[in-house]
Length: 75
Image 1 (cartoon, helix red, strand yellow):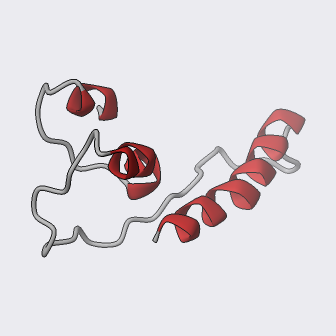
Image 2 (cartoon, rainbow, N blue to C red; image 1 turned 30 degrees about the horizontal axis):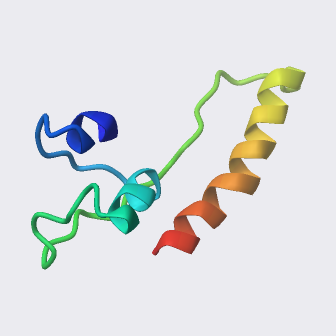
């Protein structure tokens, strides 16, 4: 969706951490700067396991480690 908006295909409501580079470069501009969407929550869902499979555990660790700093740095 960010690429579509950058290429002039319309307006998009996306998390800031996804479009921050485009905003800083001037490829995208805020349409309603006085308005903000409700805070969003990023949640990782997976089926209940006795023990997480290694792939899911690795991704979960990555998600918990990498995503919050991205969101905080952009706010």
